[in-house]
Image (tube, rainbow, N blue to C red; front, side, top):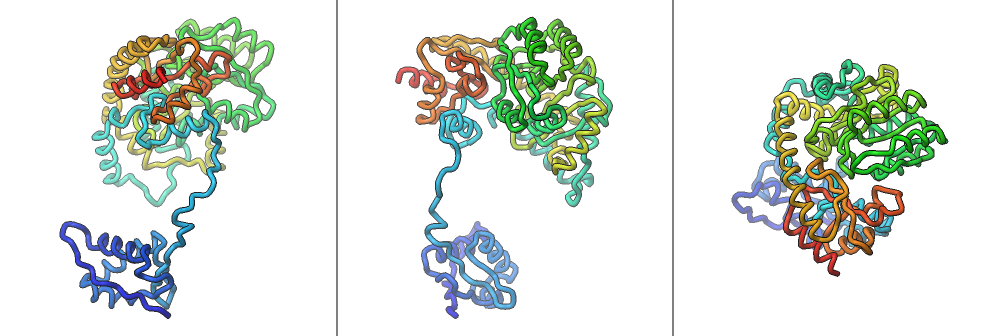
Length: 467
């Protein structure tokens, strides 16, 4: 058995000893100085050779083992394990779809240094980083943190109480047991799809709408019909005719700050939608994900009661996309079924993330953050709208409201073609075809005003139009 010869290490001040040992042994293994399969000296001998404590050696070996560079054999010791060049460098075939829309979807989520005026969340610089860190530290110090437990199936109880109070401020009065947390709004919607529709059922969607909805409904075997929605809302007479002709079991909609037009239902529109839903027996799934950054308060559908409306919202678009905390407010019957389904499919949520969110709701920092965000969005929206109009585009959404500007391109330009060219120049745009099935969707782009309010984005977009 070949024995590994370990060269002396000249430790540098200011860098942890463990890290220096790991770094130097990693280089020696990867460059062949320590042959594959060679046996390392015992821990005691390594400790004496390097003039460090045994615990330091053990820690270094643990890290090397985690990197796959060392393997241990019980009763025998530690051995060098040098991965082959193929396993280190070969990437294999890219199995993901390569069409323009699929590439755009991936680029919108990936922070690779590209400009992302088409994405759907706030920039990191807009998030309340200091307040979030304080909430994290407070949560980690709290005795209520139960690291060895799964937590409540319905969600962290103090958070649900905070959400009950929050919902009451928009006119939704709901008992605590009818509020259920989920890992994100898509999970909440997916769970509700399982409870409300069966294969072959018809579901009505706004057009345009969030692109995941069509894909998710197809997986559930639903038939999808759409109704056009713009900055003025939708044609309620056409809406009723669709209900008569197709008898959908579910209507899914953004009640406030519709993505991407920014439209919010008025009191008259809410009244009419609710009257039609009861008359034709269609359940409404109200997605209020952007409601916390609404400037002008409008009514929620769920404020009239939850017998025919299920309400969904969350914090991924306003607080942090990484800490996924969302929630639903449901009728007693649906809430009971949701609890059962959530438990059965392993959907119990992270109590750690929920406690952090609860802290920010309870200490007022979340409310301060959303107030600041509303003001910033209003100012950014005005600036972005101006340079879009200067570029020859027309703004087809409500100015100053919400996160998005729905923009019609100058005559003759194709949004997908523009988006494809943008990817080549690290500019990630959201073409209308990502959000709409309508024939004229190719003429639209969705701009996130928070990501678009920069000279760099403006200049890149103008250059793209000139190419």
